[in-house]
Image (cartoon, rainbow, N blue to C red; front, side, top):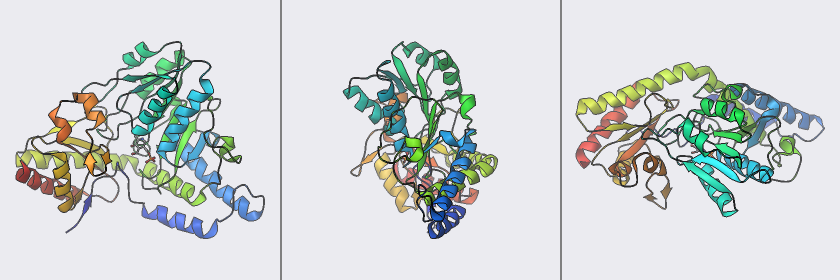
Length: 379
Ligand SMILES: Cc1ncc(COP(=O)(O)O)c(C=O)c1O
């Protein structure tokens, strides 16, 4: 039986070209980028090149890119970094109810340390209103952190409009673009963000590396102390092969972006067609107009997410509920709770298909048919 991996929003297999470049880097670039001898200088060169490629994808300059261990660390660096650096100016933070836990749990920790956090609600499509951000702003607000695109339902947030709003307010603006990086055209200047997080393993790069774009002059404390790496913003010897792999993945994704977006649009249409033709009941979650291309979250009434996912797994279709899986049990998704309320039946019967490189229309159609068979059996 062919297995069909449709969980690319969780993580992606590494792209072949990335593996090739990383293997070469692991074999040849062994120096410490801080060393002044030739081996060190070669490592520095590889690192500089990777950083420049990553910066280019965001319309940023290389100096503004801080390499981290992934999206989680980038989010933590942005939130704790700004909170600690600006606590004397104010202690209020604005975020949304549908952020990734890398943001939400960081904010909750800050609340326990005396900061005040406003968690903005979203509408039924998972979108926050710019007017709600405006209303929540006070003279005490030092940070606004709103995700670019949601990892569970795919809804895009009005980042450019919030950026425009914050032109007239001194709060630092951070966006978690972990799901959007590589699939959306992102230009930090156009968005008017001060900080932006991205991660390598969501785009066919290696796990364990990500980045925080930090606009020059952004006030932010370091969270890791040691050497002078990353311009003293994040100490520790750099992982050059991972940086090389991340940059290669970002470059390939950027080149393929128009084709990829079109293909994923088609995959969504195929799944909808399969479900419709089979006559099963379903509703698509998220915002039709403002959507990440690779996320397709659907409610299939009458199914129970846990047994549904197990059955899909046995049928070789790897998808996810989009929400946290703790010790084998699935907590209701905080994103769907924010969209539909805690008593909604959708909480128990929604799953997320997410697309990536290596798929084709036949595989997606096959996955759709296998899904339909299971839905018919379970409902
Ligand atoms: C929106 C979002 N933010 C942050 C993260 C965390 O990124 P990482 O896995 O690189 O730590 C993820 C990963 O699932 C995500 O989807």
